Amino acid sequence: MHACVIGAGVIGVTTAWQLARQGWQVTLVDTAAEPAGGASHANGGQLSYSYVAPLAEPGMLPHLPAWLLNPASPLRFRPRADPLQWRWCLQFLRACNTRAASATSAQLLSLSYLSRQTLHEIQRESPIDFGHARNGKLIVYRTPALLEKARAQVALQATLGADQQILAADELIEREPALAPARDRLAGAVYTPSEESGDCARFTQGLFRQLAAMDQVTVRMRTPIRQLERSGDRIRRLLTANGESIEADQFVVAAGMGSRPLLAALGSRAPLYPLKGYSLSLPCTSDQAPAISVTDYERKTVYANLGGTLRIAAMVGIGVADHGIEADRIALVKQQARELLPRMDMGQAQAWAGYRPATPHGRPLIGRSRAAGNLWLNIGHGALGFTLACGSSHLLGSLMDGSAPAIDPAPFQPRC
Image (cartoon, rainbow, N blue to C red; front, side):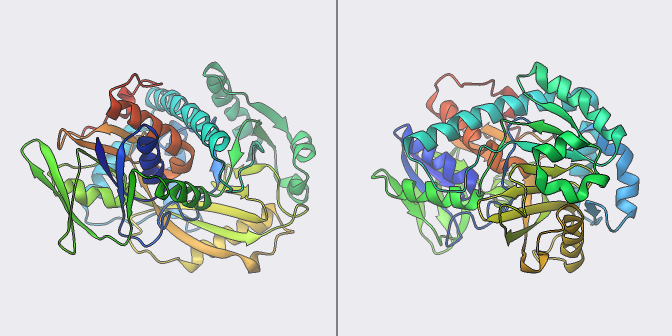
């Protein structure tokens, strides 16, 4: 069987690798020159397996009015005359309830634990150097009330197999001394010892090199994609912009936001919207940067030590349609980082911005598309792409092979 996988970000590359591992002939296609050039390039670097609560949760709603009016908030919303934006936002608001958020958290946890297992198998069989560290994660809180509220989420996740601890401020500093200069600003933290970190781009590029060396794999980078040509209920071939065509038995769309126009041409409306995120990468030493990954809960900012490089990722932009890096947003990230880690030299930081392809409910779409009998989707991972990539690809590989999946695929089944 021959599968054509569209997209060479972390989702597409892990999908192609999984299928090749299962014995498929694989063609991987992308318009970019190199893998991991989009949302996978400089993301937060956290492999957040035990903390995958969706963005759409009840605690979001009370903050929305203040965030929308505050230019320094972690959320920037620019309304547009775009039906897709308003449809997505309304679906997002409907998902912001306790029942939906709890169900989605449980479903994402099952997928994330499968992802962790699969990544560890990759590292045992053919290790990739991507700064991988099993260093744990701290979610730090500035106010005692929010720390107390976090206990409920910790209790919920404990019933689902997560191992987490509540730390008081002094316990937090003892666990992570790099945060000592900010001791007076912190109320405490949730500590998850099982969490990991790594450089998503380096992982994707390393797995891509393994994939390209396989006899049954063809890699087609720098290949602009024009459309998927359908005949009856099946995709017949992929047409490129230069007039070439790629035929296959099965086709997989894993192209992030590039998936939406491909599916729209087939009459299928994918519920994806680009949430713009920002990151900084700067050199660090062991006495400057935290050894443990850190999430600043109120600031919605994450810090990951990638082995000599500190990755800081923050902000969500809805309706921010340009690909540029807004100076005011980067300045705000630097200011907030200086508050937490004053020993870091922010003058050395390299800024990046990219789009996270997100569904309104927070669950990725993994499975057969309704647009054609031989078309499959692996899209919509939002800010959890790196965390969920290996598990999503494992699940999709099982579905495409017709073998029993390791987890329930129903919550991730596409309706497009």
